[in-house]
Length: 397
Ligand code: PMP
Image (cartoon, rainbow, N blue to C red; front, side, top):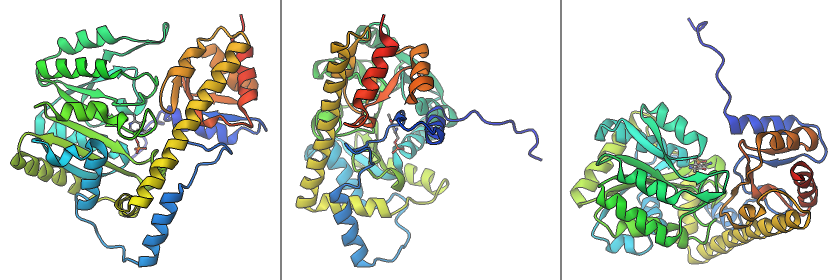
């Protein structure tokens, strides 16, 4: 029955992680998968999360089914986190459901586009996170690209991006990263976002924002600039968000999908459509992670503690960027170290080429994702000098 099934291509990022785990090199360094590690190289359990979870456990709640769309409190908190207090006062209406991580939100959004909006295509940035391709193609959409980043010069291809948007058919779906672009770490300025939103409006396009790193760019509020500006327009749009990174709840699989609609009736109907899609897929979301985040965001003290812990994580990444770039500059590297210094979020598109990447892996057991994406939090005081020296070695003229 199953003999015709051929071996599947491994996921490039996950298989890199497996290769790293099996590597016996005592100085091996994992700069591949998008995980935040602290200065000791550990994945943190955030204190605010720990306290919120303790409180939950003390309540000894039974593990009952949640509503299909997840908790209503959680949905309101997601809206406030993404749109600020403006969410409640806006003339637009948001339909928000809890999802199985940010990936689950993207898949649910893709199913919604296919089944309820008859969309057959989506436009993503070139390059984008590899799983965007997998998720959207898996849902039945044809994935097209718009110009975004020039790896040779390290520059945003802003004009080409605007031109591409201007040429899209009305109603075309464009996937946008509001902050911490994965994989390039290159974001739009506020002025550039305004220009993009202007074109989206003029061309009546349908933006699908994917925000997986809120708080890792410039701050929890600042990172939502594009979302909040778009909420001020009359555009309908989708937003997928993830709590994997900014609450370090990777394995709890917690995220949200919000759809911005023109009327309360429309939002209620959209929410009904999302519930139908959820019910016939996995029925309802898991509860532990959402209960943690609910408790955390509902308590002013815990919320502030979380925001300050997140700010420290952001600062640590920025400092790491500066230190690595300075080390490379002092060592006379041929690599454009300014990219590492100036890009935002967890990743840097270093410009290291395939041969340099393979040398780093073979000679030094340093793992990056092709073609040269480095996850900065994998660096710490114990391995920074080792990695700097290795990059210098592979990039010297
Ligand atoms: N979007 C982007 C751009 C991401 O980088 C990620 C996580 N790597 C996700 C979505 C999905 O996040 P999650 O792990 O919560 O599914």
